[in-house]
Amino acid sequence: MPHPDATHGDCANTTTLYGRARVSAQRAAIAEVVPLMRGAFTAEDLHRAVAAHTPGIGLATIYRAIAAMQEAGALASVGERDGSALLAACARNDHHHHLVCTGCGRVVGIECPIDEATLNAAEREGHLVTSHQIVLYGLCSRCRQREGA
Amino acid sequence: MPHPDATHGDCANTTTLYGRARVSAQRAAIAEVVPLMRGAFTAEDLHRAVAAHTPGIGLATIYRAIAAMQEAGALASVGERDGSALLAACARNDHHHHLVCTGCGRVVGIECPIDEATLNAAEREGHLVTSHQIVLYGLCSRCRQREGA
DNA sequence: TCGCGAAGTGAGAATAGTTCTCACTTAGGA
DNA sequence: TCCTAAGTGAGAACTATTCTCACTTCGCGA
Image 1: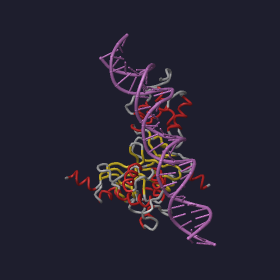
Image 2: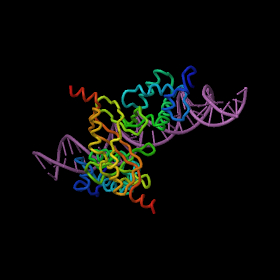
Image 3: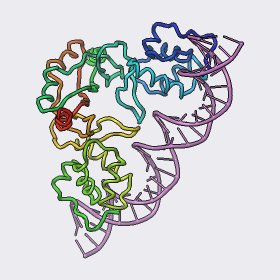
Image 4: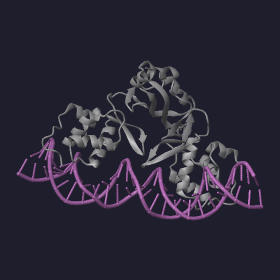
């Protein structure tokens, strides 16, 4: 049951997040919360966070919104924690990957670290690479500074 | 209940596959089947294949062996299919990654496609990369030839 | 050869993340 | 105002994986 007084539809942000999918009040609420999530989060984390703003929102709605956002490239899966998928919001729309900070859990978007030439090495072996999935693990700049201090 | 007449323990192959873990008859049977698996496979696929040689082997045993082999680096997770984890046998022990062929499902071990210099770019932004996980998707040499033909 | 403790096993119950179903509501175009 | 497609909440269903339990086996020292 979409909340009657929530904003929806014409929000520029949400159209980016959901692609061409219809944007209801619930999805708009989710779209507002996602960029505020710190680091990688699970579907349940997101449900809790959204429910704080929009009480009564169903878990199924969360999963449906996640699927729509993943399809639109606004959300990425960056591994798993305790058996549930870890998600991260994508602030950028271009081709990029993620660095998951093992210190604070924050997820940072980074340039694609695959060198074209190196990628061609696979081609020299006869393979044709059409897509790839990369997750880097390490320390973000903040945690690194904190460790150094 | 380990099968009384199965070989175990002193198989050079299995010690590589399981690291320092104890190698029972069941695990030896699994170790024999894993290299024969074509392409990526699920735990259930492996269970079926092993059960053909060793009837009655439990699914829990399969999962335990998978965990041991992953720890030993003999088995890698290369994504998922229909909600279950996709696994691939690692023929090599050095640092490498996998190309999952979208044509035949075969998994090929490939050199790490991350250029040191490019990886350092993340470092220039202040991040410290300690590990990474890469899966490439595309066509293996065989499928590419078949498509070209 | 025996005894002992650690580790592996099969069966199946338990857990939990995710998906599906259903009746209903809403958006938006004609 | 209708009509249709799509979204919603609730909760059941599904299913991959883990856990528990009683038992067996291995490895090693005496």
